[in-house]
Image (cartoon, rainbow, N blue to C red):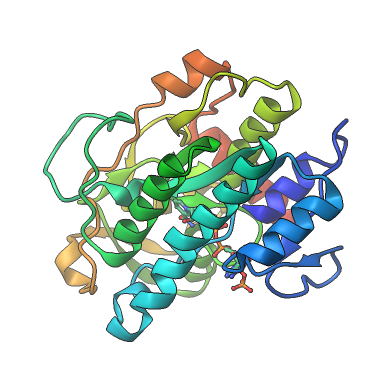
Length: 287
Ligand SMILES: NC(=O)c1ccc[n+]([C@@H]2O[C@H](COP(=O)([O-])OP(=O)(O)OC[C@H]3O[C@@H](n4cnc5c(N)ncnc54)[C@H](OP(=O)(O)O)[C@@H]3O)[C@@H](O)[C@H]2O)c1
């Protein structure tokens, strides 16, 4: 997500700086550990920052379940966003924060989740991300929280890149069909966030918003389209149930996000998931 923000903000009329906890190869990076409030404050002061877009988090869903990791996961997903919100509150700035569909999942439902639906996380990742949202809301800072789902891009490790590799190298593959949601091209979310900041659409619109691509599919459908768009016709892809892939976390069976609010408030573009998938695979084929 952070890498996509770098791309979409390239020609901004605003000045963006990029931070990470470690040096990013080939990219200008200011080192910042967002668990440290004093360091955040000094960077905000030094660069006169008035908007922060937080793309950092603990994102290893299964790894978050290890009891010895709890403190660290809570620190990154709940305390660090609070730090960023405090720093923005102190200068009258805005925190834009990314959250997740994993704040839902505990209750069975089959209609798209709205922003005010009660959080019912089923695992530590979702629980700590929900704590992060609550801490930001309590901070008194202006904030935009974007809950998204099934993020992928040309960068880092993600489902699309894994499946491109597996469908190219395995004769047969089983993928779950009993979990449905909507994939989100990180570029589309970054573009929407950039549009909101660049055009100051955030004024008076503090709150939680849902943003994924349009449409609904299962991981099985997603994989079938990844194979089709990349021309991998040899691999036999079969649907299976989630219990064939035991995991320490119960994943939401239905986590489609209702995007009415983000579209009505900000009039941002929300492309259909297959259109965006095609673009990402096309970009990956050029690398
Ligand atoms: N991936 C998904 O499917 C998905 C779905 C819904 C929502 N989200 C949310 O979307 C956001 C972006 O996700 P992503 O997939 O782009 O995450 P990602 O690839 O895991 O990137 C997270 C980044 O945070 C950095 N980081 C870790 N600890 C830090 C610290 N103490 N200070 C500063 N930076 C630190 C990481 O650095 P290192 O790499 O050096 O550790 C990494 O660059 C997250 O909030 C995530 O919860 C993701």
